[in-house]
Amino acid sequence: AVDFVRFRLSSTSVFSRCGSQTSRLLNTMVSCVSLLSVLTLYLGAAHALRFHLKPNTKRCLKDEVLKDVLVSGEYHLSETPGHKTDLTVKDSNGHILYNKDDIREGKFAFTTDAYDVYEVCFITKMPSEVKGADREVQLQLKHGAEAKNYQGLAEVGKLKPLEMKLQQLEDLSEAVVKDFAYMRQREEEMRDTNESTNSRVLYFSIFSMCCLLGLATWQVLYLRRFFKAKKLIE
Image 1 (cartoon, rainbow, N blue to C red):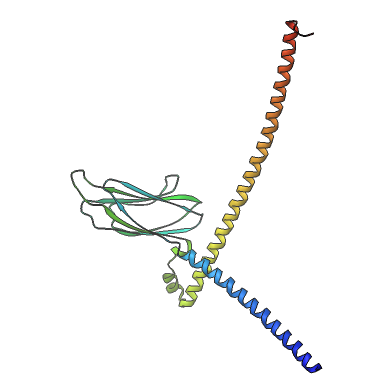
Image 2 (cartoon, rainbow, N blue to C red; image 1 turned 90 degrees about the vertical axis):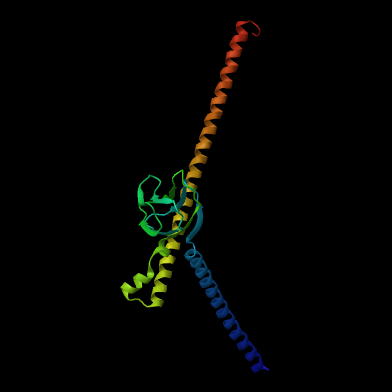
């Protein structure tokens, strides 16, 4: 009976250790799956757009990008007789980063100097006497790690496909961490702004109450002197 109890106790401890190890393994797998999901979503965040341009119109697309981020774009326009389309990329201050006239297809790339809103504008022109259909535009914008040419980097650095994928995942991880750090910074700035606003509102409320009390006191004293002058009160 004693040996049976010892066997049950040892079996229970073994099952407990196995259960704890399985639990840790499951938690690790869940964490890895979550990280891969985030990276996959981040990798698939390229902006692929398709729209139509009417003759003699301007269509601008704005995008908010952090500082020191590589931005690349690829565009393709349909063949439409009579249409002439120009492309301009600029920041909120009007600095032109890319400009090309009478485009058909091509690519552009630049690195941001500061956190800003960048604008991609398509301007189509057509003589008034010429009638034509709308022109289809296909545009794909990429930011950060997704904008890098890893195939070219792998050829230059003589990297294996697995090493190239690991480098891509590392860059994506750094980009995600940078985005979270920026969001945390913005949250701290917003909190400081809210606290400053609350303090100012409190001081303004106290000042307003003091002004009202002073005005009420002045009115009482003024009316008291007025009524005494009219001999309505003693």
